[in-house]
Length: 107
Image (cartoon, rainbow, N blue to C red; front, side):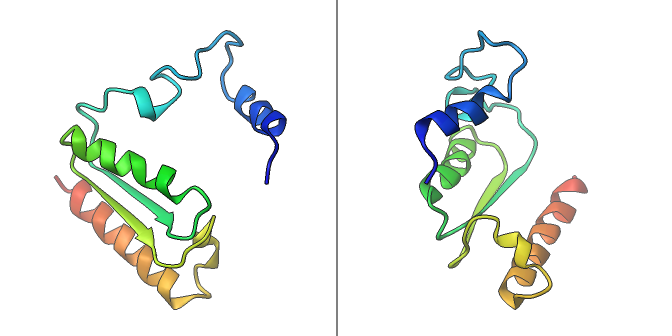
């Protein structure tokens, strides 16, 4: 796994302002007001190390009444979509993502 120092190095590479508040809503969805977001879909691997953290945005979107869907890929791991074209279950999941997008981009 990654060390705390490595994770902080990655985190520090994102914002341009070194004094940014990493717990603030501009950086973390966990504290953001999600009201008014467009339809949103969240896909993640069921076997992702932090699967619950992946599912949380879907729960928060629902709490804010945003049209949304959260779909775990059964037995999917980190970056599971890299198996596209090689694993039939992944191809099916990608088809479902496309169907969801087509449905909601029309409205």
